[in-house]
Amino acid sequence: MTLDGKPVEFFNESGRFGLEKMINAAQRKRLDNQLFELRWPQGASSVGVQLRIISNAATPAPAAPAAPVNSGNGPQAKPGALPSIIAGPDEAMANNNKQ
Picture (cartoon, rainbow, N blue to C red):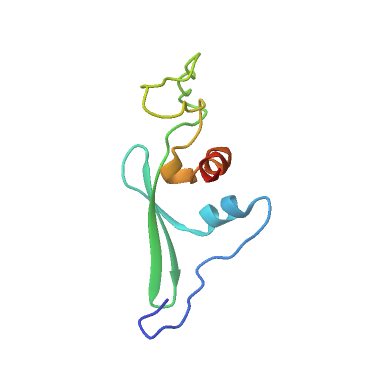
């Protein structure tokens, strides 16, 4: 959205390879070993994000724990599950809380 209220579209690609096309369309700049800046310009405006690579084929990811770790104050997380602050609340938990 511009200062005068006009919407600006920086990228719009749906489908199976949308994320890959979005990354390829960006102006990319390496900031350090695993951090990149991606920027999409449109006229006088641009949108930039920083992307950190946390795993790739060159550096194997650590193995998932055999059992979920639970500190005793909340539901157990599944290995590889995103925190609810990022992924949103678990639908099953949300439905249980409504009852």
